[in-house]
Image (tube, rainbow, N blue to C red; front, side):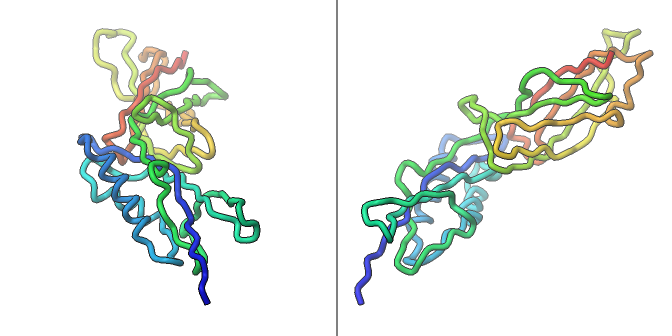
Amino acid sequence: RLETINPVLISGTFYLVPAPTVPATALPTFTAAVRDAVDALAIGEPLSVRRLSALAFNVPGLADVAEAQLSFEKENPDEPGETIEGDVTDPFLISQTEVVRADGEVLTAVLLRAIQVFGAPRSTDGSVEIDLQVEDSAGTAVEFGDVGIDVEVTINAGRLDAPEQPPRRIGGFTREVRFTNTTTATLVLSAGDLSGFDPGEDDPNVEVTISAAAYPGLQGAATTIDLS
């Protein structure tokens, strides 16, 4: 019995975490590897997003994939001429009469650049809230579906009696911030995180630096909080 083999087209974006040094070839090399891997799948073979993301480890200049936001499009078998679209799961299963293929230039990758502080910090009941975003290489805040990033936070304060001296470290920690269907995640500094501050000796305008603990290639951010 002859059956038509129907293509399932994959499109979307891989958000790539840079290494400290990124050659110009990193992005096209990764994109080409992903498209080749998708187009090499056999009829009825499922797609593994995890395996595609792992290709980043073979490309100089790339540290990881923060998230792959992929979608599919295929013909509706019950309604010829109509299409079905949706998000790609992992693994992405198809029928024995379908074959997964890359949707040309629509399957792309974007390089992340930096963590940024969004807006002014907010003081609430002894704690401080700092909103964070992750920007891509074009300076656009990325909306993640579900991504957690461990950030390393350092808290420094200058001395009231010696303002010319470098600020001293009064606290620090590593904590996860999570982006869930949004461009913004909130980092909360509790009263315990700020317990090293001495109002009699320290300048109330305290410096907070934030960086990605596992990804030195992702630029960090800094802000000032008022503890007066």
